[in-house]
Structures are given as C-alpha cells and as structure tokens.
Length: 140
Figure (cartoon, rainbow, N blue to C red):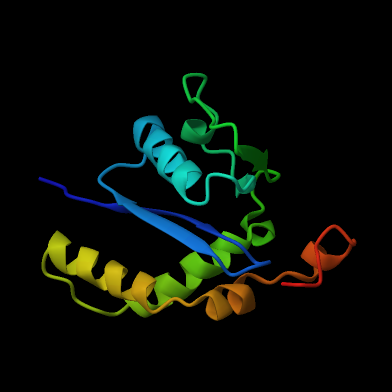
C-alpha cells in the first residue's frame, strides 16, 4: 500500500508570517480544510493566496472564506510564487535522507516548520517585484 502526506502552506514575504498544515491527501477536500483553518488565523486580516492552476485550487465546490482571495499565477511559472522557494528549501533538506516510516517524514516536516522563522520566510520568499509598487507599508 502506498502512503503519503502533503504539506499545504502560505507564506508572507511582507511580514514573514506563515501557516502550514499537513494533510493526508492533496485534493479539493483537504484544500478546503486548509482554507478554513488559514481563514481562522488572524480572522480580521485579508489574505491573498498565490496559487498554481491545480484543479483542486479551482474546484467549483470550494467555498472561499470572505477574508481570503485566490490569485492564480500563469501556467508553468512556479518561479512567480514566493511559496515555491520555501518548498525548494524543504526539498533540499529532505533529499538524500532515509525516512523509514511516514511518521518519520511527518516528524521531519514538523521540525522544518518549527525552525522556520518570520525572518527566514521574508528572506527566502522575497521577490523584487513584490515591492515594485508602493502598495505595502514600510513598517514591515
């Protein structure tokens, strides 16, 4: 039997805030859970998620919380998504290691998330185009 797990995440290159949720599947239902949980983190904050064009990101049955907007990047352009830099970092840390069980992988992911600071997220996710206009406050 094939076992897997998936890490959903949102990362702010502006504040360094981040939210991760480990899920057993990568589909519309688990993405809905992620959206609902993310919505509850700082519920008065409006969040914009940059996403690829995965089918589960665009499913008709998704209920997008009122404090979240989905913004889709062009197809085949992961380099435009700041979150991809976090995934690349985690994949590099994961590569070349033997994890004998799914629980070991989950522990590895938990450790990676635990050591990820807001300063790290800002540094890793920063793209010059994010500050190309004056939409963001200089207080961050």
